Image 1 (cartoon, rainbow, N blue to C red):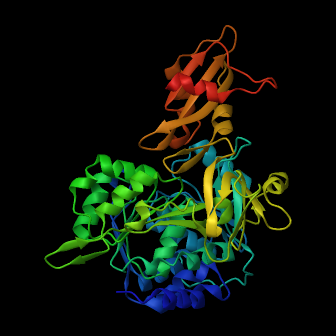
Image 2: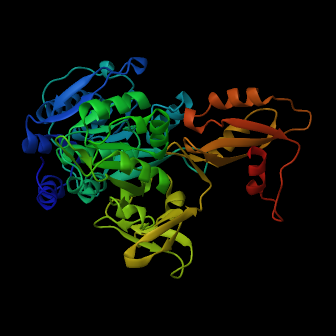
Image 3: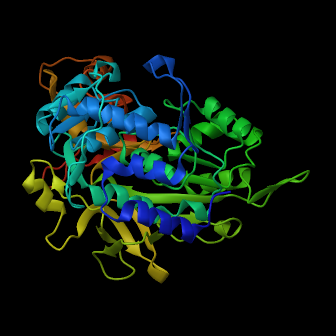
Amino acid sequence: MYEGGMEALDRIGLLLGRDPHLGTVAERLAVAFGDRPLVEQAANQRDGVTALSLTYRQAAVEVGRLAASIAAGAGPGERVVVAVPNGYRFLLLCLAASRAGCVAVPVNPQMTDSEVEHVIADCGAALVIRLEADLPRRRGLPAVRPTAPDDVAALFYTSGTTGHPKGVRLTHRALTGTIRGLGLPRWVRADEAVLSLPAAHIYGFIAYLGLAAFGIPAYVIPRFRPVEALDAIEQRRASAFLGVPATYRLLLEAGAEQRDLSCVRLWVSGADAMPADLARRFQKLGATACLPFLGGIGEAVFAEGYGMVELGGAVAIKVHPPIVGRLLDVGMGVPLPGWKLKVDAPRGQVGELLVRGPGTMKGYHGAPEATAAVLGEDGWLRTGDLARRGPLGTVAFAGRAKDVIKNGGYSVYALEVERALEEHEAVAEAAVLGVPDERKGERVVAVVRLLEGGAATEDELLAFARERLSTYKVPQEVKVVDGLPRTGTDKVQKAKLRELFA
């Protein structure tokens, strides 16, 4: 059993709160936890990811070795793009880049070659790591480069409304400070947590770091497979599972309710809004405690995080307590320590949600106008999400103001997909929207108007999109129409287009 909540928070504060530096996290945790198990990872032959088992001390040695290799190819302050397949070593490479004094640039493995090339060019990368084996082998740990807490530690690229991904500049304070606010030991024992999250996504990155910081061993499945995840939870008697709403739906379809998951004390979801009924079904599958001969007693806790890459991860949490969670819905929840939320509207009315706190980005890389549009001089960031102030400091989420589609936990900006489709020589105009999907929350669909005399089938347009977009951004369905419904100001009325996909 791991130490109590407040004692753990004090320890994490000492480890990471003084002189925060992303590159020294592995060393500091090795001092605290030594030879305790850190991670076990399943192999993923499809992507060439091997099985892995590391203690805290071994991970620190690996980060140091990798840092020496990275330092041979990139200098202090230069950008290092990490574009290896998903897995725990992805995280280690990012920590190593920071340890070498560089700025880590995680790249989602689902990005197409053209998207990766845009990131490389946009950030001015000095080094691109596509395969770890390509790094030169060097010895000797490089000296820690002096940094300030508000120096940029990493660039996380996110889809942008301009049609190209934008680099979000996150500081050492942002990426290490989020960990302290999670308080995981209050709800979960240190048995083990099962997760299958992309390390290039801010949710996955912070989740891996958070588990490590609280001494909770992780069992990592690099590419999510629901049956494999259920087997891991059931056979390993894991205390926690971290996923997104889409993975929870897939777990149900794979027979979760026919499994013994009473070992789970805590279910965690992020990256998208979690349906309350789905959360409650999983609460019943877990338990408050497991007793000899009696099995599971009570229900598990279900926790949802709200955040975004521009905020360095989660900033608010909504907890479904056992039993009580069936009767009480506290909306989005309450802010994590250090964060402030406000709604740009009178109490009781819906307005845009604004957030301020230690993890707020320093801005978009090389895009001052885009930065000024969302980040005020007073530090408040306009999220583009709609919310309503609730009682006792809670905030109820009411929708998204931005034209963004949440597909399986990933953010897909409609304009980016529209621009890609409109590159086709036969396409005059494209309108992209999200429609409800039981498995992924929303699926991406498109309506296309062709140029006069132009010819293109729906299958041809889908194939065209696959060549230019990440898998999760590609529309699952395209419909060709003669005209698009419009408002008086000539904007496409996307609400009417939803009828085509009813």
